[in-house]
Amino acid sequence: MPKVEVKHKSTVGPQDAMGKIKTFFETDQDLRRLDPKIECNFPNGSTSGKVKGSQFKADIVVTQDGTGSAISVVIDLPLLLAPFKGKVEESIKKKLGRYLA
Image (cartoon, rainbow, N blue to C red; front, side, top):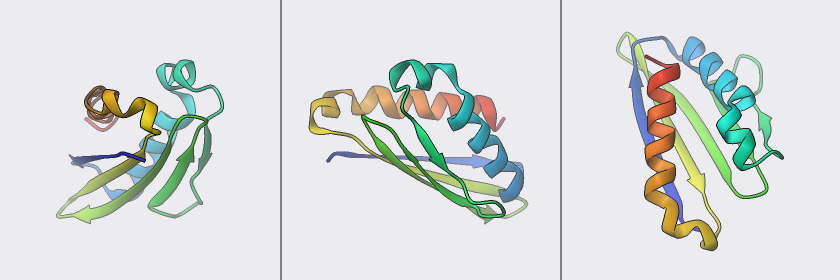
């Protein structure tokens, strides 16, 4: 499976960033339109989580970075979606920027 890694830096702390990422993956309508079978696993108090859909899997890790946080999202795509790696990466970066401004 092709992997897409998206990195983002935020000025909010890791716990706040994880809360916003959780909201993004659980409620974003664009993601739901692409894959309505998304299941999120974000343990309470953790700064990592997993998202699984019928078309992809993603691992999310948030770490402390100075006074803010560093976010890493690694997405596994099926071979059929490999040509769309760039579009997926661009979309996730844009959404993270919006949620974690």
